[in-house]
Image (cartoon, rainbow, N blue to C red; front, top):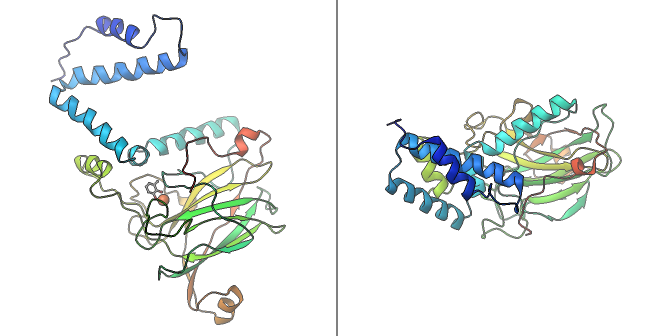
Length: 308
Ligand code: MBD
Ligand code: FE
């Protein structure tokens, strides 16, 4: 089984030509990376004596993955997106720029340009009879001083675990909003408690997970981009405590510091003050941003994103 048939030198000769090592044009970094990656694929085929049928099945799988637009979903499920976080954390640690609220993955379901409000807004369109949620907190610097003019970009699923835009049955930008903080650094939204997400059961990501004996579920969570001039951009999520999948997220995004407790609010006067139904659930989460002078660090990672 692990008897290889191919001489490594012959493989290197093939790769040198197929990856353009023997030409002057093209991009050297790209050539080097592809040589490594393609070589790893070839060595894997040789090591496991991968059959032609298996190879063409894999080719077809990649086609289906692309057709269904699930490549980013699979990247999350295989832990590749989390691996990028592990590297970013290690880099920040090494550079002495670690600190603030921890990052965790963006995931594949962000939509840019959600409606922008000052201080407070409502995120749900009122059609989903979920548990009303008051989500609020403060953006500060590491010393605890409020950060004014921070933009808190929030997105989350409905009670079925579905996200607007990708779920065409929801209204435009439902459960997606941006809130700009005032002088107190505070943000607050009225929304509904989200449910956890499950991979499309008939999709290629779930099919692969099945072959690995894994599930494709995420605990209930809320996504955030938090940014402000002079601060390092933060991509993160909070997980709602008590969820069955809290420590068994198929996308590896849970972190101890990012767990928030949903608390039942029965104080009628407080509900009235918030213009919320009584009772409702509140979720409080504060963000700490780390200062940064580099404009590249102040923005989210460049990545092709949907524009509503
Ligand atoms: C999600 O909602 C999500 O956040 C991730 C990372 C993957 C799939 C669905
Ligand atoms: Fe999500």
